[in-house]
Image 1 (cartoon, rainbow, N blue to C red):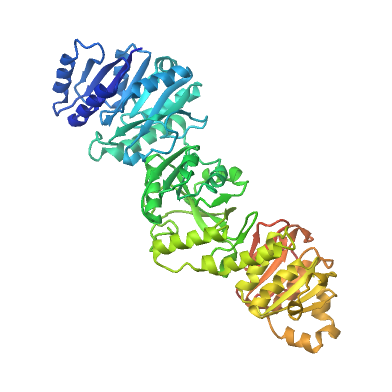
Image 2: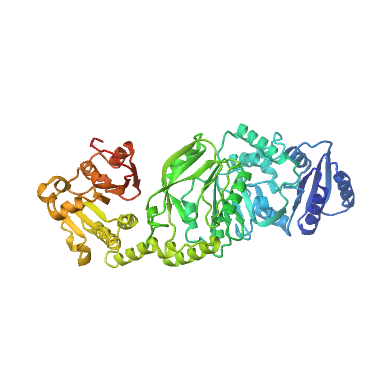
Length: 633
């Protein structure tokens, strides 16, 4: 079966020569060549005439030449070649490419195997397009999903089915250079034809070699404008990330982002199946050596811009979005907002371990800018090679989303050892806190508690972390159901040397067996109102001494019998020191609904955050003296 190979030419004779030599050396199927000279002035026209004369008696590689006296653009030149051909398959080939052995046979066989494929592309070695090797299986055909993203199937080397072209028409000649491939791809998919990528054909491509000086960005801008006019404003969300040996987590991360059109992943030398897993998703994989996180993200970002991203999201492989992100992202992309910040939680829970990332003080959320409109001046810069920091150079309105990103960080002691060695080698700094610091202590505590209570809930580990992080000397606890929160607080206080005062508690003393811990505990079976206002209790020597000391942490459980949590907050607030933390657990039990007390506090200028635990887990920071005398919510 004969296939015509159409090669538009505009100068760059040396590239054209190498392109033809590769075709002649590596093509084993019957083919014809159609050169379309777009007004070359470097001798390309004369050379093509000589090539035609030398091929007049050939059984394959017959040459046709179409000569234009001016540069009419890529789309016009290709269409002239298609009209001049009568072959059932047409290959479009840039003159700055070099094809590998057996390339045409592989493409024809794949097209014959599936008659619904209208267009098929290949992989490229062009640096600007990413080093594709390893991103897909060595041999095979990847069918694009119904959701096609601009730039996924470029025509530097592509085979088209004549029947598909007869169905949807030729290239749109309003596109002078760039954009014509995306337009035709969209028309093909709209008409029910498949798009495919042959992963066994890797073509050497000197990307942009034949573009006129200074014209590259101008033509791209013009093409994008034409696409938007023709197809309407379409967003292309690209997620960028850097990875190394993340096979245990990368799928969890990628699966949490069904709203992303394409992933640009920089692999820093993975030796496991990370790259193979990434290849199962619409992606480009770039390869780098040496640890340099800012460099890698800058590389991925520039590739996202090159591929036409309208919005960029950056993530770590050990992160994932909460489920409702799939509903919220389209809403955010539709708004004229330059960037969005999200809530990142470094405290995590896995099936076997808890972890706190860094010092104890980082137990709560961090607001980070992760999503933004594509802007040319955005970049990453950091003195630390292992961490890129936040993007810089963003301009425009910034929105704040309450969507949460779960940051899994370090999940096992063995992983901590690997991370410490990796970070210290990259930055030359001490990262011992990842191995020997608060995180390791928390893991040890949880593992020890699990021996008697395998189902320990996550909030208890967070309680332990907060009490340790504040180096608390005095903690008040109101409302105790089973004593397990009491145990977490007391064991943390055993490290800090502090004391716990509990009231409105159930009969849970049996949980606390350790006599040393019991010595740190003062408990009262009455209500918080009794504790605050009952003279007989307040006037005992121990109570008078304690109440003169402001608490570092106050823990209020919303499910206790005295359910007027608002009154508890107002009554206990003066006993909390500035810089202290109030924890409101089980907010579903609050009389006016979940989160209402936290909102009430926020309206009074108090930092109050609702963490993603079952039934609610509010963390309130007392950063200044604020009078709470109105209990209405």
